[in-house]
Image (cartoon, rainbow, N blue to C red; front, side, top):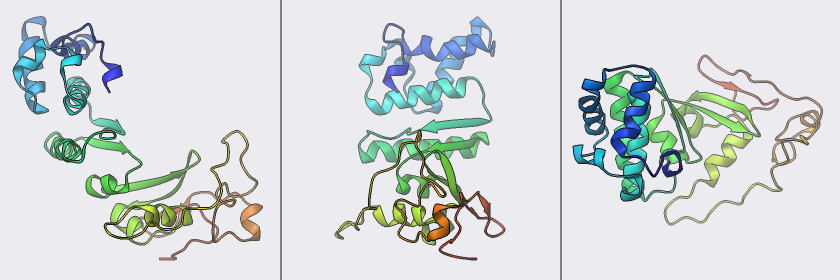
Length: 221
């Protein structure tokens, strides 16, 4: 997030950029709108006069969120928005995003490798492997009873307090430029059968709310 902020420009000017680009407020109202956005993401008004180098990692993420909100979006895409931060700062930002989603009626698309974060924040989840969605559905349902073997492997690999880590999946992820024949997960799947190496499964309906791209899903309801 810090790399997206010009280090030579103040935070106030950075947040004002989308306001000017989309002509959202007049120049006279710009400062007050910047102050409102800073307040909305939990930053003090005097942060407008500071530079990115003077902010912590969590504050930088808040500035990035304020810039995104400045254009008055209906959809907000957050790509690894809390990665690399300590756990307490992550929690603060997740609660902020959750409140913004609720108060502003935002559709939040949250991209993450952390299943714990996804389970806290997301109502629906889409599991991807090698650039393709392999399972979708309500987050709790997918994580508690995965239908795709890769979803199950991710769930099993999530660390648990005072418990040993599960055995990792065998092999390495294939190159996207040289995909295996048939199902792209077949080279690592513990449930792979002969037809998995011949047919590439497409995402199909599993139930009213769930879909899976697997010839032999782990659950059928």
